[in-house]
Image (cartoon, rainbow, N blue to C red; front, side, top):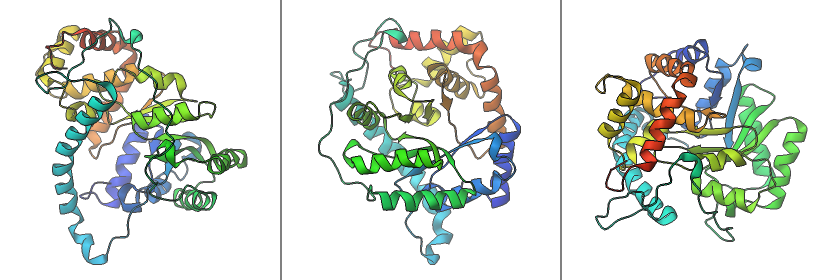
Length: 335
């Protein structure tokens, strides 16, 4: 939904993805200032039985005054420039808080590195009794209103995966959860789950461990506990932001990762596109039984990502070797 794209170009991007084997599409009422669901609904005509769709509950766009609409492209450009440094700071603070990853130089590093990915164990999140208020009321009336709006915009009678957008454990209550289960019985949604951060998702799963949560989380190269979520996710684990988070966390040395991957796969570390290749192969390996989501406004990147997907099985041993090497690296090595 990039500001520079027309509706026809947006539809062509979706058609490009479909033509290259992409069959799952993720959206939300918030995306594209409320336009993304309707666009996906147009695209899915005649294809609905061959694709799966995720949309979400909770976050909705604020109304935009007519006078502000011409300024949206500029606002989005400024937003991108300002948000990346902000996310870097927030990611570092969250890692220090939740994982205790710090050293005397005030640079984040992993202090304890197990010998393999399979050996990683992460402490359980404690139950959350109190917390911030949700952006919308988590009630049956609001839930039914939002889902009916999404069904209408998507031009469908069911949603495959309905996720609670940026949800926290303190938002949830038993009547709301019962309505979610009733919507499954009614056939309006096939599966429900959490589309939130890793820590927030842990809290929800631990507080409501018997519910059949589908889990969708951001997953960067240095997030080494992905298997914890995979084991606890009903159906499939969905991971996203593989490229963005890996580059924003500030813990990674791009050259170090590229050099490792180039050595393992016998490639030129300066080859264009190599970084995206290694990050996607790592994400597909970490979430080999689930779904890795990417976003792009470039048809060539969509095609290249589809090619990486087709090669994922052949590259899995190399990706496993890379991930193990990053985990086992000395503490002085930035990863």
